[in-house]
Length: 454
Image 1 (cartoon, rainbow, N blue to C red):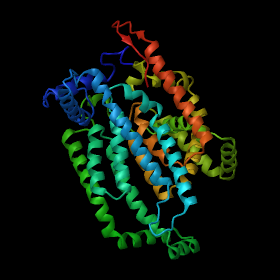
Image 2 (tube, rainbow, N blue to C red):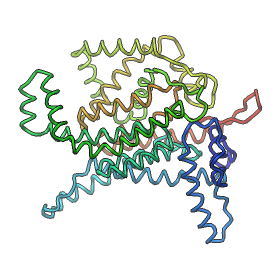
Image 3 (tube, one colour):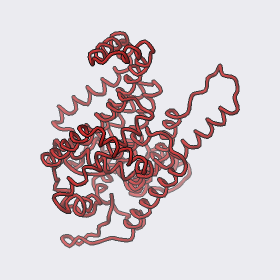
Image 4 (cartoon, rainbow, N blue to C red):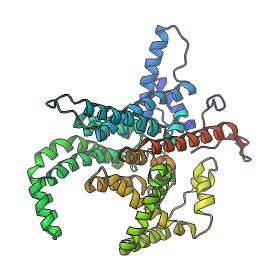
């Protein structure tokens, strides 16, 4: 890709010059069109200094801040993403070894098989088409994803101060990552409540009661008993949240530059777009005949919930759909064609695909519920809502972290389904890269060569 597009492309025309200013120790000049904080440029500054030092020792002549080398920085994040994804999958799925347990060859063999599956699954997920494509361009996505997932991993291992610190770096790459820092804190607290709710006496009390006040009373009781423990966990994350709120107040917006084009909105259909997005990229896992039959059966049995969900979606589409000018004006992005040739094909299309969105909610919930508690799913849902709904622009890149977080928390899949996922990702990666390289086109208004991308 670099051979056909050696110059900055798309958002790189803002990112690369800014990174090069930092490379020249010019930390005061700022491009007002850049919307994110300077995390990527600061990281590139240190990577470039390390590269320059190695280059000096080897008596080489590499420009550590050239377009090619800045793009090359993504290789470090890509490697890091694979390793963090593997450790997350291992933590989620591989039972910890009990030091007091006698050596059991069968148990060790089972753990090894799980680890192999985790390694393959991490390899597949790290090749997620949007992450893969933006590896070749100087964008924030790989670095943003890496530091967000690392924050989550550290929080799961109870390194909460370190998690909060890494969370700050994630926010410096992309401001909306503050939601995922709070998600990490919320999941850590949820583990306390889930563990307390698994106590047999509590389960017995809940089973015998039909009064919702019982749940509330137990929640209050757990909070009182575990208050000091909860506080010891959340205080580093609270500092991050307070600092971020102070930044927003001082800055007057969540974005740094180009504020007029990034005004928040109550764009509820963004959730529906995310559901369609997830259903497509997880098709090998979520589209199975038995799942569809189960959905139809449950949708009929619980018809009132189906009706409420459908009516809510109809109102959301009718009242809260926003079409950003960037979406309509920029024919370089695939979202332009998805909108024009699918969603905007006919006014009824957004309503006709509501059953697909209902199926997506149903099957994603059922898949997550195999491994996660309802409290975890609730916290995850809130995080997805906060990340997607305020965005006026339909941009697939906004879905990367929510999707990856969701996919990592699916149960481990069997190898046939993983092979289907590999085939889907490989096909999409091949098509998007080949299209970028071999299908340039010219904008008549300025005569510049353009290329298709996510």
